[in-house]
Image (cartoon, rainbow, N blue to C red; front, side, top):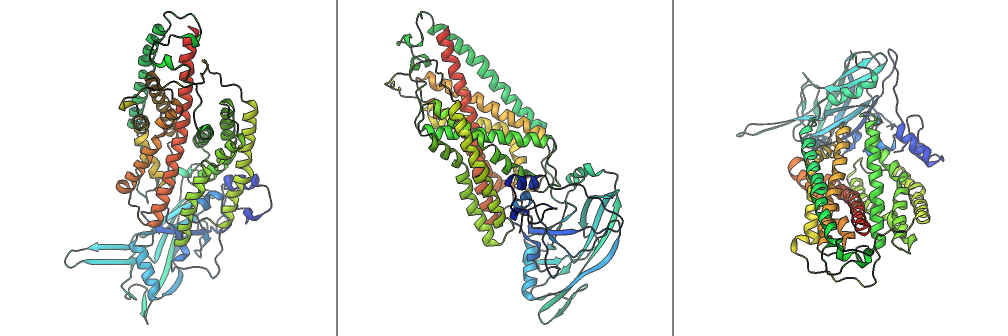
Amino acid sequence: MQCGTGHLPGGCQRTMGLHCVLILCLFSGWAVGYKQGDNVTLYVNKVGPYHNPQETYHYYTLPVCRPEKVHHKSLSLGEVLDGDRMAESIYYIRFKENVEKKTLCKLTLSEKQVDELREAIEELFYFEFVLDDVPIWGFVGYIEESGFLPHSHKVGLWTHLDFNIEYNGDSVIFANVSVKDVKPVPLEEGAGAAVGGVGVGGGSLTVTHTYSVRWFESTLPHGRRAERLRDYSFFPKTLEIHWLSIINSLVLVVLLLGFVIIILMRVLKNDFARYNVEEEGGCDDLDQGDNGWKIIHTDVFRFPPYKSLLCAVLGVGAQFLTLATGIILMALLGMFNVHRHGSINSTAIVLYALTSCVSGYVSCSFYTQINGQRWVWNIILTSSLFSAPLFLTWSVVNSIHWWSGSTQALPATTVLLILGAWVLVGFPLTVIGGIVGKNRAGSFQAPCRTRNIARQIPTQPWYKHTAVHMAIGGFLPFSAISVELYYIFATVWGREYYTLYGILLCVFAILLSVGACISVALTYFLLSGEDHRWWWRSVLSTGSTGLFIFVYSVFYYRNRSSMSGLVQSTEFFGYSLLTAMVFSLMLGSVSFWASLAFIRYIYRSLKMD
């Protein structure tokens, strides 16, 4: 399987620049005009269990009608990542020409092939065809369970398909298949029975596949044909306009903001008034007899352990914030539609490579500010903090897909393309960003000087321990997105088309706002207990939202989906772990910068008053 564009066969193997390949893979596809009688190529794509969306196999792995020599379509990067493996079919379809019950082929199936079809039908295998970039879905066969005593178990194969195609002018708008008024061919144990175009002999089964084509005129313009596909209901629809969840999240944000701004600022006002009653000198001359956050002013800006790891977390978190914001904004601009197979996958890979400079810059800049010396090691750690777990997870998942023969296993050319994107674009940009960040980094700008000897931290009550803060700081942001999270899971791990990008942007902003507010509040409570170890605590408190998201993924797998099997389960839990890690990095970065800004504010205000 090669990755390329519709007008550049084998583009992955050509010796042209990597940027050109990525751009062609990302933006391939446009409207095609047909004339009366023009051939409209129907591609067969993949089959798989209905309840396991990521467990897919090539259509020609089943004993079905096929050409003597299979010709595959050149695919974009996103299509390959989505498990597409399109190949030309022997269906003969001409533009605006109806066909009635035309013979496709006559097959003689062995007993083993009959058993293969029976097993596929019993596992609810569906197929996917593609006609002018319009996906067409249908079930391979029919299964019926009836009666109790005696119990009846019938399995039938659909040998006739009715193609219903809508057009407007010279463009294809929509297409689907139906088996209405068609009787399935029964597949009995062994060779089966002779029913409707089926012959039995010598342990084999002979079936005749036929098809019909009907064209219908549509008033929907080509530019809006994605709306027609979104309204089609082969797969169950659960996406709705869910403003109630948005209102619920907004109420939570308002309450949190009210708590932080009103209550916390009143407490700070009282603190400022008490700490500055008899102050005459700077921050270093404060009365050491007081208690609370003021007394640790000489320790609060003491640099934390594991500086390089902390900066790498902040850098990669900033990269994913940029990446997520970019994808959502591009979606709002209409750059993704349901007819561009895997376009979001392609965009994510390109943006991940291009935004690597953000992670390098943020990480190395802050690492230099806090007196880090091993900046080369910091750049290497930043570039591998997420890419290493991603590669490890992908290796395991891809190996299982390869072992099972699934189309989700990436071809060697695609692996080399993605690896090249990281080696030739992602890693160099991380290094460049790190060098620029190191050279442009200023001083840390701490309002108070730090003494050489650290102050002893008093014993903290149980509700100020790290685990408690992580539970509070993780649960509240998770509760703000829990409803929307279901729809996201239904899109990623189901068959939904997510189109409510405006709502998604609102929820994303709410998530970041809640994370920042909770972090500031928890940091204040930590400092008020004379504990100056806020650096890592601020990252972990809100970053623990990723743990709640992973727990929710387990709940979704067991109670909200029908996924099963080694192939689907490995992919689901492997990439759910990576998703939880991404959320932890993003929210950990946001909470740290919010806490740092808050701490600088209160100690600067204390010194200036």
